[in-house]
Amino acid sequence: VPELPEVESARATIEAAALHRPIADVDDTDTWECRPHAPGEIRAALVGRSLTAACRQGKSLWCETGGGGPVLGLHLGMSGRILVTGAAGALTEGGDRLVGPGSAAEQADRNPVWTRFTIVFADGGTLRLFDKRRLGRVRLDPDLGALGPDAERITAAAFRARVGRGTAPVKARLLDQSVLAGVGNLLADETLWQARISPLRPAGELSVEELDRLRRALRAATRSAIRKGGVHTGAFIAHRTRGGSCPRCGATLARATVGGRTTFWCPVEQL
DNA sequence: AACAATGTTCAGTC
DNA sequence: GGACTGAACATTGT
Image 1 (cartoon, rainbow, N blue to C red):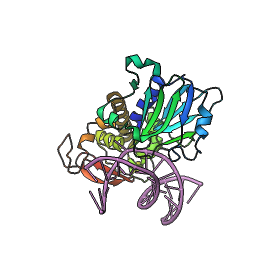
Image 2: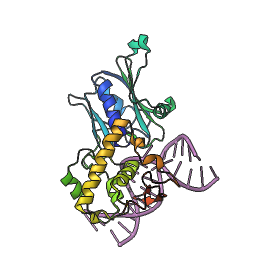
Image 3: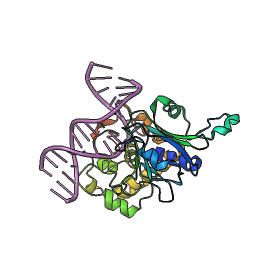
């Protein structure tokens, strides 16, 4: 379920529970998830070190390891989830205390079968990446240079300049991580619906007023999703199905592929 | 069984 | 070279 809000949640989990715990072992044997690294390469780079910071820009997540150590990039892809467990010595309190978001759906996606990467701390606890659909990625020193400003922090001026240009549909522009980092398919639909702007509008034709409205809607939707626990909590998302209707006016939603992704919008209100 | 799925990337076209 | 589009990637659920 990872879009910016879910990745921020994963980052906060690591920051709260996984920092400064010496690393005793690493399972990096999933050669697809850890591509292009050879098995053992990530392990060799991490064992003996600790994670010292958890950072995020858009949907990209990474950990610093301090003291000239490598950066550990963790991209959650389409279905990645992070789980951190406490020290094995804490067994009297129930042992494997799970740290991180715990909704039923999220717990269900933590089937051990989908474990793709594991860090074992010296205290016996672990940090694990579960990734059902396997489009996530773990890599050392990831290239983050192509990312645009984070969607939650971009200024109004930068938003106007970066998003409000080109002939591509505004939704495609919002989804372009080099323009703006963090917006995924659901957050884009929610934002455009909140701002009452059609996803099909050529980005360069939006007025300054519309761009500012879009940015405000994006910030509000992003912060709400972080607070409530994910993009699926958006007011529009529940209605985002074939034959669904607009939660405001009741019109049947339009559906099409825009920017390469399935897109729903209200054809009456979003102009 | 065919299709869609909240991710990125890369080849190809203008 | 930049802007843009569509397919591919691995896997699961409908």
